[in-house]
Image 1 (cartoon, rainbow, N blue to C red):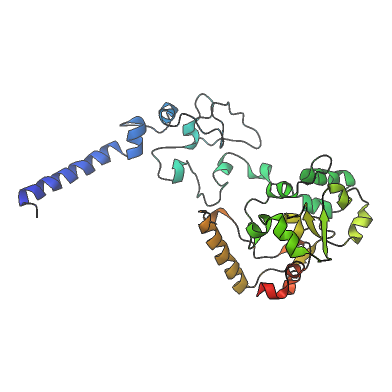
Image 2: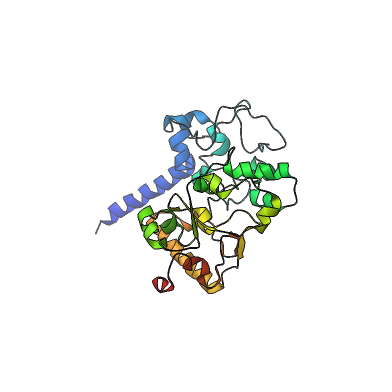
Length: 298
């Protein structure tokens, strides 16, 4: 046990440390700019962050305010230009030291402090294709997913927009080896395997499109998003939402898989409200049974 004199010294040292911490403020502020650091001088940032932050947002560019972009007064510019400290304040206590005028609950809440959310709403090609819009508008929706020339890149076309909606079974299906898929689907007549986009006859009349039935499609021997989903509302089969019990099972399974991948669930959104764009009926496991025998699912 320390003597009484030593304990007094320890107490005095602790008090002095607390007083010192209170005088200089945030420890990170001291590290970056020293006593009295205002949090608005970007030159201290590049001492450590030599590569800057080009992936997230460019800096040193002149801000030109428009209907879609307006920087709040609380986000300081340097001579009208964006800098590190426009977005970050090392005196702050928020995650990543982000400046915030409101709670940051969703990924883009921070961005929409300067950017007008209405200007960045995603175009929904599925709704456009299924609407009464003129053919030229619908053609834009086709190009939006397929590109000019209707290329067969199903996975790339889907994940460009659907980045936050993983679901049960997706990794196992998309990463399944072609030889295993071939063995699984052998003799299954409901499947259609394609090698080129032309096999789906994309240039068709509107009336013909409405008369078509959804297909279970394999792309070059692989399971793709379009195997289970059909992006065309005129053809697709709607799937009902999950009952509470099954929704909980799906969430737990996804949590388990994300833990294995060292990812957090709050980065994603789980859809339990049903899906409109399916290739076949889900009720009673009908879609699953196109490839899997009922005994293999037990």
